[in-house]
Image 1: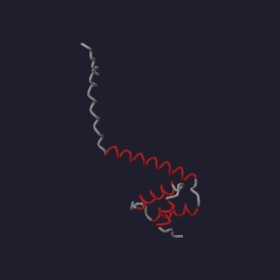
Image 2 (image 1 turned 30 degrees about the horizontal axis):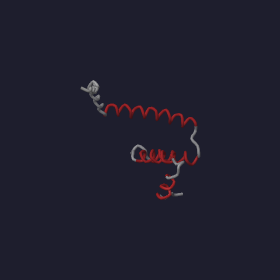
Image 3 (image 1 turned 180 degrees about the vertical axis):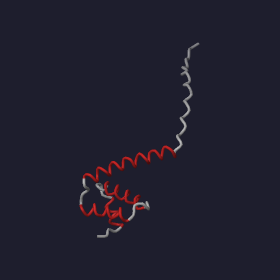
Image 4 (image 1 turned 120 degrees about the horizontal axis):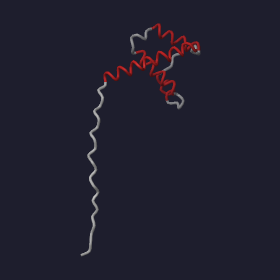
Length: 103
């Protein structure tokens, strides 16, 4: 079954389409990576056809994703220059009170 772009756009408007959106975003990123080749795509298809993810596979994927996130975080910290600290605020001026006396 081939789904049209319009059907996907309509499905993404549904309030309960958060997981669909997350999967589509992840798939879009993966498909831009040359390492996500036909063997990996076939594995994803077979998981969808099976209708479930074996527990051991889900656990291994979570562990691998954690390591991947750590790698991205480390690379980000190497590439991003920390922002300089904001200068300290000048000291507050004393509050003056105007007093008027009748002469």
